[in-house]
Image (tube, rainbow, N blue to C red; front, side, top):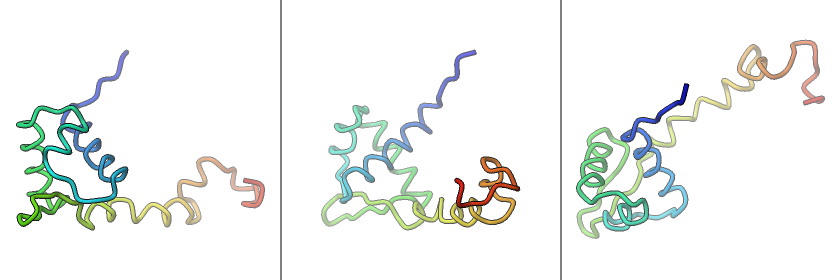
Length: 101
């Protein structure tokens, strides 16, 4: 069985990864050209991300930038991974000392 990806979900993550690579505010045309999206699709996607609170838009210089909400998505992971009985227990048997990992 071949797995398929949902285009809108993939594109949303690709936009966030582009910001991770560029590390600066980006204009609409920079985003859709870098990712090879149609302008209309990029516009609708960025508007959705804006409405959901994952992007800010600066009208003065017409740029987008991720909000702190993006970083909050994974801020719980370190605690979940390293607490007793967390995800680390899936890769390390309970009897093995952490120093052996």
